[in-house]
Length: 539
Image (cartoon, rainbow, N blue to C red; front, side, top):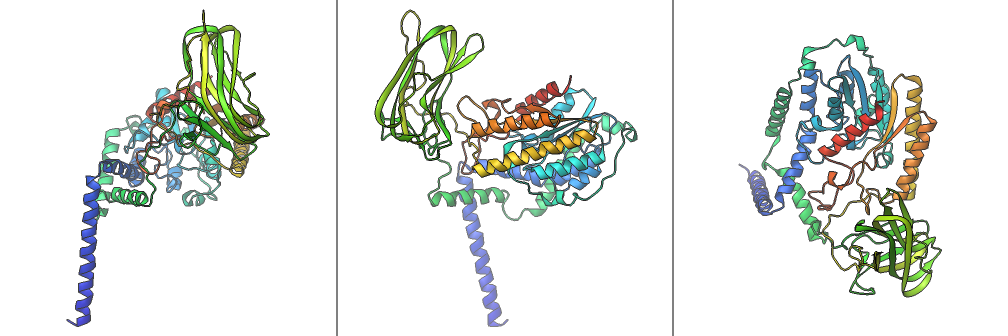
């Protein structure tokens, strides 16, 4: 053996041993880390979503049960060519990941617990629901798939989901791009004779095929580590932590208070350098004139209703100019179900001012049930601080302050929400694309026999925190869709506020670990959405 050959083999062996030692070191560190389980779960989710998709589709093809695309658009042509043939009434759902993702169930058969299957089961064998939604499905993709699906078969009801998040772009993934100019054959209802296997669907057999296929696929492709994908994610996060980005640190924020549309967030806006009492206050700094900033508190139910109440609080300002509303604002909910926002007499002056108190006694002609406090800085620019906010119900005498954490000293242990926020030019594109989609749905409705609906999908909502941080833009989006639907003779289903906080869960890993994921909901949310849809599309 020549010297240079020996040198090459030595270098190769040294490299291999170095890699092996480093790999074992990373592996040992990973399994010792208490957080390693979260990364393993994340990797399994990815495996169930991606690696199993082709096996799910193969099993569905064998059973004549293709009612959705498990490949997320990769094999949409195969899906459309093999849609389940059935003489039953048909409903088509078309949207983005909110209609196909269960954030509390990542098993291979989780589609059985999604909104489409829940909606289908509510009809007791009378309807087949087709869900051709895909993760990140853009407006352009929805238009193509909607057109092609109607080439294949006639649907009795078509529901197209349109939310701000999926109206930002008009990109088209390769799988959908390939079918744009393809003409699909049409399946007539009378061609679909009842099939015994269709009505006696063997789900256990299907699940067995899926599970076996995934295991074989993974066994062939696993190299050295059983959880190498999880180790990769873990390594990336540790590298970020070494650089000073510590994703697992949960910042401190004020109990029961949340802020929107300003320079600071719930954490950085809870400050220690300026305060009236205690050692903290709530801060707003606005650099954009048109935005409406606020701090909002939790709703408080009165132990005993009353018609009279004292409302007040303190604020300090610096260089405040052109403000439309700089005030305390209280939402009063009455026993009869009505409500009213109260800020008259609770406004603060512009300019630079030291701590100033605003207080007023309010007498109503009906009883108060609950109170929700807010502090507003609408339009204009400058910096303001708020502290010691109070609401004292009056019975025979003035009662105690009922506002939670009124002096803003207590820390919150409530999970934060990863809110979505877009620049003005992105919102302009969202409005444009949403209008375009509704117009397209209206065009389809004018030449086809089915009933057409536009659905605004659910998103995280609470009294003081919204999934979309710019709630005024979301309201504008909803108003635009409502007007567009009326102009196109399409019915609007507004499920935006359908679900409460309990339907959403937190991220398990990454830089957003511990924060609530605002777009996707779990099994109970899909069940509730299915009930909502049926109640609103049936006479």
